[in-house]
Length: 442
Image (tube, rainbow, N blue to C red; front, side, top):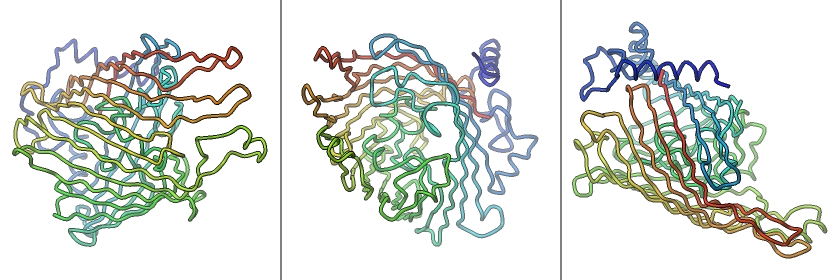
C-alpha cells in the first residue's frame, strides 16, 4: 500500500515529466547554495526565504532526503517477488568557527528511518541487492541515530573525534569516487558501496574515538585516521552498555589523491582488528552437544584496498567525468567467512554538458567464501559457496533534487538449499533483479 510519502514523491515525478523538466548545462545565478529556480536549485524546499543560506553562512546545515526503491527478482534466486521500501535521512552539521565560537570544531548528527521491505532475502545471495534498506537496522519500520559525534582540530594537520560513528558508509570510511554510500545515489548492491570483508569486525554505528591526520592540510589531498570503537554497534542504542575492553575494534585507514596522467584519482588502504570472541564458522555437531556451546575464536582481522581513477574529466578536479574503480579485501577466513573480495567497474558523473547531475555505474564483484560446515548424522555439509555479481545503473537527474534510477543486477547466489532427508542439495539459481530507485532531496 502506497504511503503518503511515496504518493507525494510520485506526484512530484509526474509533475516534472508533465512540465518537461530538464536540467540545463549551467545553474541559474543564485544568492546562495540553496537558492535558484524550482527546477535549478539544489533542494526541493529551496532556501527557506533566505534563512537556510543564512544558517549555512553561520556553519549550520541540514541535509534531508527520502529514497524509495521498488525492486523484484525476475528469475532465479529463492523466490520471485516484488517489494517496495524506502529510507529517510536527516543529517545536520555545525562548524564552531563559522558560528563564532572557536576554530576547528565540527559536530555531526544523523537521524534515519526505513519502512516496508526489500528483496534481499529472496535472492539467496550474501550481498544485499538493496543496501538502502539496511539502515538504520535491517527489516524496515526502524528509526535510529547512527551518528552523533564531534571532531576537534588542534592544528591544520591534526584532530581528534569521538561519539557515535556511522562507520563504513560515512563520508570517509572506505571512500570511493564512483562506488560508495548507502545505496541511495550510486550502486544499490552492498558489495559496491564498501568492502564487505570489513562488515564482520566493524559495526555500522558503534561508540568510539580516534585521531585524524591531514599531511597536506587539505582533506581532499590526503587523510589518515585511526579509531577505536566497540565491536558491537547499534543505531538504536547509545552504546555505553556494550563498551568493554575485551570487545573492541581497532581500525586504521589512509587515502591520498593522485595525479596519474594529469587526471584525478585516489588510492586507499586500511586494516581492522577486533579482539572480540567470535563464534567459529567451522562447527562440529559433536562439540556442540558435548559442550552445549559453539566453539569460540579469539579476534578477527581484515585488510582492504580501493582505488578510483578518472580517464576523462570535463575539467581537472571538477568531479565530473568517467573513470575506473576497484576494491580488494582479505580476512582470516575463520571466523570471518568472507575470506577474499574483489570488485571492479566503471563510473561516471556529469560527463554530458547538458546532464551535469546524471551518474552511471557498471561493476562486477567476486566473493571468495570460506564456507561454514556442520558435521551431521549423514555427512559434513557446507552451506555456502563463492558468490559473484554484476550491477548496472543510470541515475537520471530530473532536477538537481529529484533523481530517478533504473537498476539491473545479476547475482550468482552463495546459499544452498538442503534436502537432508533425501541426502541431496538443491542449489539456488542465478538471480536476475530489476529495480527502480527515486530520491528526493529536501
